[in-house]
Image (cartoon, rainbow, N blue to C red):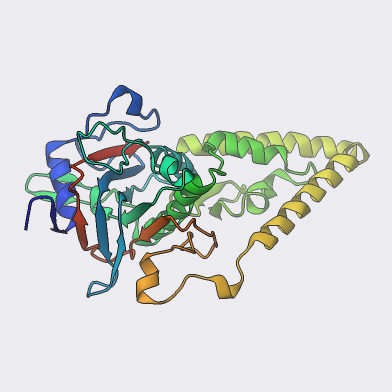
Length: 342
């Protein structure tokens, strides 16, 4: 078996990356402003991933003998730390969708690497293999590896499924919004009705973001299981105080806010109707067959959301929690880039 074609355990590759602290050099026109160099401890940041171009690759789906295959394309290995939330994923998905490392030729043939989105938008065949690889978040201590900064399995699975959907949207139609925790909270707060008491703000308007609250109504745990930090609490308190000011004004003169409350209610009703219309019918849920479990050609969201993919775009997603056995042909030349997003 030649050095460019083989069956690999991806975790072995990443242990080597962590030991040698190797981040691929990127030419000036390839630089990403959204990523930071890999830290030496291998467990910092929020999202850690590596991207490799291949001529073809097959991913083991069931730890036995079921494989999902793609031709020319990119393999993206991804892992999440305990700091990662859903809000961090859109910027990562957009960055990788536009990462100029894909090629249909061979290394050194003079062809300029381009993004997978470029190829798909031009109707050229290209594949994307998304491999969950928790071992990328690890720290070397003496002769052992520590994994304490990995997101727990359930949270990691949720983040992985969300990332799969987001990156496909970036490649196919780009219609995703990138927000930060602070400005996201600010935008939501502007749409809160003035008649909502401050102590009910997060339990109602932010119910999809948090699962535990203190006696004042301030969130203490996010829906991902991550505890609220001191700095995050300060921002939440500030948001609550702003809502309380609006509420006190409403108490003094409710009639003044009648039109605003009606407008907010109408907007919320329209958004709910749109979300219901876009929801997936039970028959469109994720296929249960072994082969289809990893190759979502016609179902780009493992969580159940449906997205029709172009026939020239092959998507292969890993089976979360499995060993991710891999066969690949990289005769196009070794090309691996590693990133840590904070």
